[in-house]
Amino acid sequence: MKRFDFLVIGSGIAGLSFALRAAQKGTVAVITKKDRAEAATNYAQGGIACVMADDDSFSRHVEDTLTAGDGLCHEKVVRRVVEHGPEAIESLIKWGVNFTRDENGKAFDLGREGGHTARRILHTKDYTGREVERALIAAAKKNANISFYDNHYAVDLLVRYPFEGEAECFGAYILHTGGQIEPFTATATVLATGGAGKVYLYTSNPDIATGDGIAMAYRAGAKVANLEFMQFHPTCLYHPYAKNFLISEAVRGEGGVLKRADGVSFMERYHPMASLAPRDIVARAIDAEIKKTGSDCAFLDITHRDPAFVRERFPAIYQKCLEFDIDMTKTPIPVVPAAHYTCGGVATDLEGKTTIGGLYAIGEVSFTGLHGANRLASNSLLEALVFSKAAAKSALDLHREKSSLPSPEPDPWDYAGTTDSDEEVVITQNWDEIRRFMWNYVGLVR
Picture 1 (cartoon, rainbow, N blue to C red):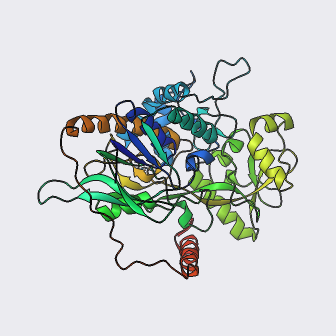
Picture 2 (picture 1 turned 90 degrees about the vertical axis):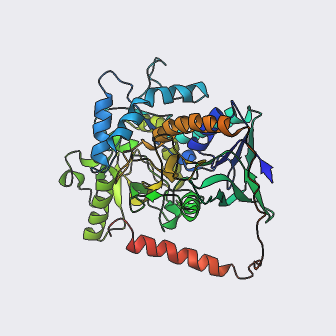
Picture 3 (picture 1 turned 135 degrees about the vertical axis):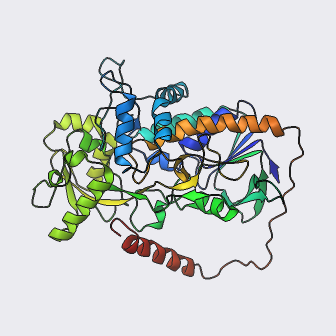
């Protein structure tokens, strides 16, 4: 058994920013399924939505979020997240994140994405998530109170169910790479496990996005909400070997136009914002056009922009496309929709608390009320930052309250009746069936 003050399951922006704050007052274990950098954050290209320009306002960002959420956002939560955006950005800069700035190196180079009525996307070229993950891991490695456990899997939460009062989480059972399962105990346990996009056949998510955190919380009796709202990103690179590489919404923000195979643009028939409409509308429009024309994909055309600008603004996307003999400065990019973001999750309050004492959920695993039926582009990293700070403050208060109390003793993991499988092909078969079933019957168009 291992004891810590705080147990964080997941190493993306939500988990790491919580760990950095909590480590100021206690010991933190960060559990991650693969390498600590292998998180959905690392694959985020676009950036972080935040009101920074003089011609923008909190009220406009709030209104854009409510519109994209199709009336199902919780307005109180939206306002809180939007208004805490600038201080969240300050925290990232303090931790070492380098955002792209203008030619003078002073003002931020703000991008625009679908559903936004103003330029408010802070970014590091087109690999913002990678830069954020780099900086947060570097900061965490310098903190002696933070211990990383790479290639470890959370199996189930440790929860005590008293006869009276609320259930209380005090850690989790963790599977080592060697096959042993060991209890990790903590005053506060934080789910930062990301979403469930990998349950779909086609997804922009990394392989780790299998909904583990939501499932563990649900099994433990925590309230979950809005799980029916899965966001599909409209533009993933269509190529048999691309593994659903994401083409950032920022490409459309810089003038990219969606077209059919015959070169005709079509988004103006679906929404007044045309190619810059919210993601759900664009994804359904592409799906409809593909089905109507019998094509395999749609095309994203930014060939009318200066080639030097395209290469400078989108270096990662440009290089990835070249790997598949696509020069995006000369040829439109073939794109298709893919599962991208879990808008629902483990229900929390404004401090990231779940309905189980001592258990917090932050980032994509959570349902805070910010996203409604559809997430506004680049609001996800912002949400993770704002709620990780609130959760850290609450968890530190909880730790002070309970530091003098005896810790619960977990039972050892019960291995009775379990054996190593000699037919893992069955698991592969079931996994493939689930993903095809979800894509065909619980997909973009129900």
